[in-house]
Length: 415
Image 1 (cartoon, one colour):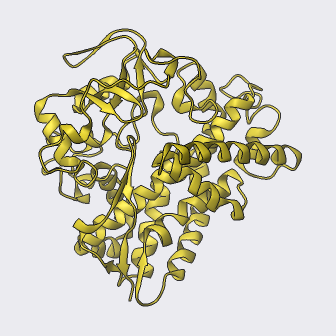
Image 2 (cartoon, one colour; image 1 turned 90 degrees about the horizontal axis):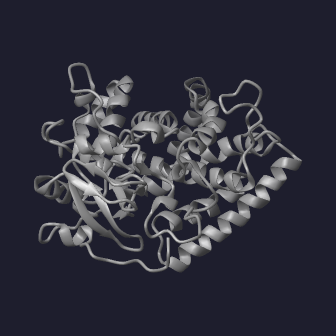
Image 3 (tube, helix red, strand yellow; image 1 turned 135 degrees about the vertical axis):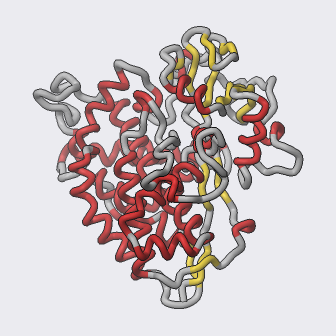
């Protein structure tokens, strides 16, 4: 986008009811907006004005509206820079480019591949649970929910263990930056690192995803849906590294910590999970609904004027779809602010959230995230049955950006 970020609309905080913090209590803000209407004009600091969709039916329609594109070149404020976070990636492209890029990695995220990864994920979770102190306190974000997906995506991509902490820190700064300068420095450092790592993968490939993508043919082969031999460009390869790393661990950290938080607030549900580990899928789905790690979609841009509900979205306008609002829609879920895994059990309303998106941009890594979270919850419930919250729920700090939300820390008593 251009350097100028015009503002004609209120921020989400300014739209919130008096005294309500949209980071700590997003549900109150979304419920307030939903009562006023399904679509609202908001200002996103650092990005400009956008239409925010909070209605369930309107959200589903917007996510499949062919007039709304992910490529920033459809934005009225785009000038010249391509607008990509780092390289050219699936999240910021549209078909047919998106289709080609997705096809190059989709075979690495099939149910069979995910099932084959589960024993290793469980081994990592067991090691982390065993490493928690036997007495005193621990932080289940820093000591458990964070290192698990960092290790998993690191092994999947082929990132050396000694480099993963740096990548985690850069990812943190890109999603919830301390400053614009910190975000810029993180982006530059990550770009340099991946360029060097990919060069090493080409010289000495391993049995990992980045080696496959960096090889001649870019992970495509004869008979692939991509057309066979349709390699990634250098810019696309860099973008794929960025997206797989950031999307592959940051949101899963929020999912695991959000689920642990919900269970620790309701010891009866934690005991039920311990007694019936096979019910973990319900816990994961209810966490996705109530504590959506990705609160809104990436920006979409109207390639032409369109309607969302009764609102006219002008050509070039930016649009954000609130996935969190859909999960808390009282028209779909009774008492939407209450954590109740039974919603996703026999006789429940079934899946109705859009936590992983909808349409062609539905999250490719959804099966991996669900599996990792399920393993993390069942292992901790079984191995550390005495864990309990060490702070009042109202005192916990949440990290939030325009797109994501999760706990900064989850202090617990472990003895």
